[in-house]
Length: 164
Image (cartoon, rainbow, N blue to C red; front, top):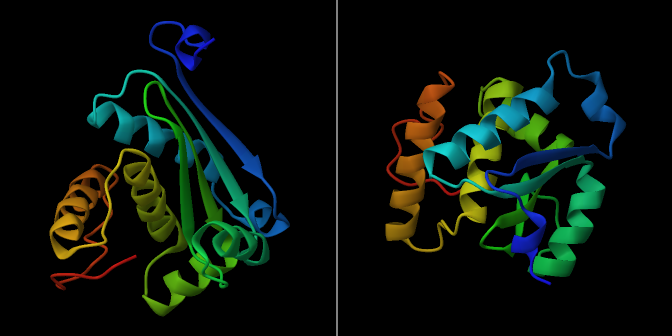
């Protein structure tokens, strides 16, 4: 039985998991924000059927995943894992400590940086990448366009190229 048989027409689902208490201390509804962002990005990219899981976790937990799956033994801000292309099924995982630290270091609001990283993670699920300059320019251009909808300024400043 294929995943397609589990999806009815126009199936759109975003499931949120909170695995770290730090996320619960935020003063805005980040679960609603995450769903809104995912739905907008996938609508923009004309993806009609999807099931995306977003997990909000600690730096320690994401470091384990980063080490296991990317052989990079340090925390990161966002990881994306795709399981099926059509219908689109995947996970986006975000680390509170790294995002909080980066937003402070970069002089951005936590919410703006989080929005950018959710967009970034969703684009990875869609096959976008930033391994080469050409790929990065395409992905970053799309990020800037999508973030404009949420009134988030260019996350890369005036820089031509800056990997997340």
